[in-house]
Each structure stands twice: as C-alpha cells, then as structure tokens.
Amino acid sequence: MRIIGLTGGIGSGKSTVSAYLREKKIPVVDADSISRQLTAPGSSLLPAVRILLGDKVFREDGKLNRQAVADIIFNDKELLKSYEELITNETARRCLEELRQLDEQKRWKAAVLDAPLLFECGMQQYMDENWLVQADPETRIARVTARDGISREAICDRMQRQMSEEKKASLADVIIENSGSLEELYRQIDRQLERIGNEG
Ligand code: ADP
Image 1 (cartoon, rainbow, N blue to C red):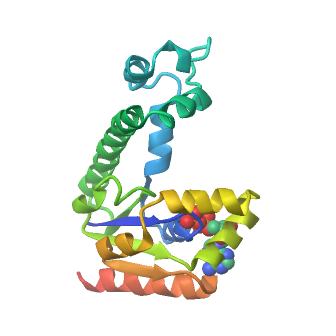
Image 2 (cartoon, rainbow, N blue to C red; image 1 turned 90 degrees about the horizontal axis):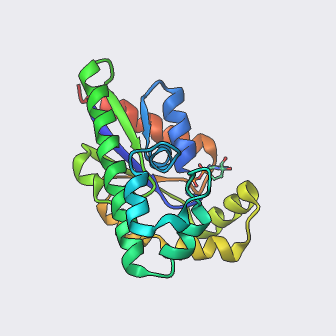
C-alpha cells in the first residue's frame, strides 16, 4: 500500500483534495481530528497537560479550557514548544498506527495522511510520497474569507506563521496547483491516482 502525505497551507484546498480522495474510496487518516480527540474529555493525554499547564486550564467539569491554554502557551515560547511536542508527537504516533492498520488489511492500493502540519512535524519521512496543495495567496485569502468569514488580517497573520511555501515545496514530491477551477484540481488528482495505479 502506498502511503501519501497530503498537506497545504490554509485556504490552499487541502480539505477539498481530501474529500475528493475519500469520494474515490481512498482511506484518509485525518491528523487534525486525531489531534482534537487527544484533548477531548477522557483523553489519556489530559493528565500530562495538567502537569505542564496546571489546574487553571481545566474547567470545573474537567474539560480543557482551550482559551486558557492558548493564553498561556502563546505567551511562553518554552511552554508552547512543550505543549506542541506533547500533542504533536502523540498525534503522529496515532496517525502512523492507523496507517499501519490500514496496510495490514491489504485492501487498498493507497492511503492518505491528511496533515496540515505534515512537514512541521517531520511526518513526511514516514510517507512513500508527499503531496502539497498550493494556490496563489490572493486566491487563498479570498477562499478563506468566503468560507470562514474571518478578516483578511487574521488570515494573513496565520499564513505568515505557517512554514513558507518555498520550504514546503522543497519537501514535497508532488505539487497540486489549485489556483484554477475545481475541474483542474480533480484532473491533477486523477492523474496522480492513475500513476499510482500503474505503478503496480
Ligand atoms: P484548506 O483545507 O486548504 O484550508 P479548503 O479545501 O477548505 O482549504 O478550501 C478553501 C475554500 O475554497 C473552500 O470553501 C473550498 O470549497 C474552496 N475551494 C477549494 N478549491 C477551490 C477551487 N479550485 N475553486 C473554487 N473554490 C475552491
């Protein structure tokens, strides 16, 4: 089974690619949803979060107060690093475990890891190939504005905090260019899937 890492900056169209792959019956492991599960009530990681950040980030009902977490970690670089490592490493471990289980089933020719932070977390090294979805910045801003209704400044700020597109491109094996129509996007994916199918 060929394992494909899929990533792209905010508004690039990564989720659109991911949805299309699912439509094509390709299993997709979603790193973001695994990461959210890790801090959901009852998660085995919460005690470690309590040790790192203290009781003040928990509500009375035991749920993690995400705003309190953000207030602390974004004002303390060391804590931010530790928190990211705690969540990121466990997310990566669980993603790889899910991919391993899919591989064991021997039912699929390919599986995808959808991970916004694929390169930032160094996960690309465990993939057979890595796809990067790109679109020009203005297109990305317009799409996110329409999708989320957040301000241009907020989007630009997030874009700037992400790894540069040049660096990402240097780590990718396949670049999916998504500044055009959805048809053009899907055609590129079909072509890649055909290649993988032909590789035997
Ligand atoms: P990401 O997951 O990379 O943040 P999305 O896949 O959610 O981005 O795409 C951002 C928005 O742009 C979504 O509303 C999506 O439907 C839309 N979109 C993505 N690609 C295209 C395209 N080629 N043409 C038109 N709209 C698109």
